[in-house]
Length: 289
Ligand SMILES: C[S@@+](CC[C@H](N)C(=O)[O-])C[C@H]1O[C@@H](n2cnc3c(N)ncnc32)[C@H](O)[C@@H]1O
View 1 (tube, rainbow, N blue to C red):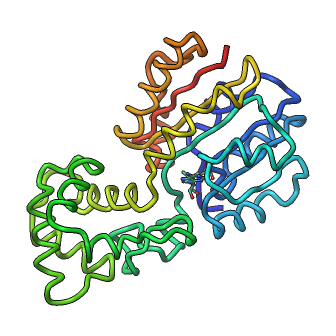
View 2: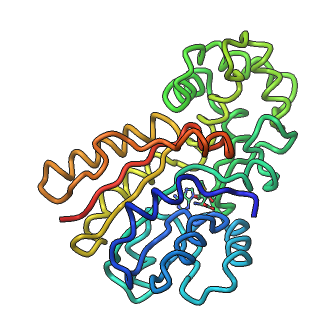
């Protein structure tokens, strides 16, 4: 397995309370967290969900020894129906470990990383229509600038949007490398972050409507948990974290929920040293009353 699960110990600590419970790993990926939980809690059952069929195959290989796990292809914002199809209405805990996996960057070939040279696809789910290619080749300067600003928090959004629209007059922009070079030419590098990082993040969020799906599941979660049921969310950028923080606060104000992490939990220094991908992770957890 190439993907190292982030804050696995902390996830277990905040998620598992009912030792014979049913838990949902709503972003099962290659199965890192699920494997950790199945190993450490010998009587729990897990329903593992992912939107990407390819990565689910990997999860299935990595978890083949375990009968206590069921893997389902689907979007976590459709959790109610997925549980229904599994003959379950409520569960004891839900884990969301957001964003993409090492698999997406290194092996998927779907253009998630500007460090590879791949077609600009970026869909987790190949059934969806909108690709990053479609966005960079058809959206107007205004539309591109808005999405780079909103989902990338990139202050130089308009300049980059203009450079993209100018470049595509000559040739369609079809690869991650072409896009990276256009961005590099348009703006100077500042600090440690490569200028393409935030633009790629914005495109990925837009293609997969990541923030919409996150808001949808968080609002619905209390109805899908047994009393005492837990929710644990790991985010990797401030846009996601803000949604989790706000939704948890709203649920608490409605008297439905207890927040267990007044401040988000961060990985220990040792974990960041071993797994640099974990450096931006923030974990928030709560409980249904
Ligand atoms: C960070 S990875 C999860 C890694 C996993 N926890 C592990 O330890 O191996 C996030 C996964 O969530 C999936 N994903 C993203 N949005 C989703 C959604 N709306 N519904 C279901 N899966 C989603 C991605 O395809 C990706 O595999």
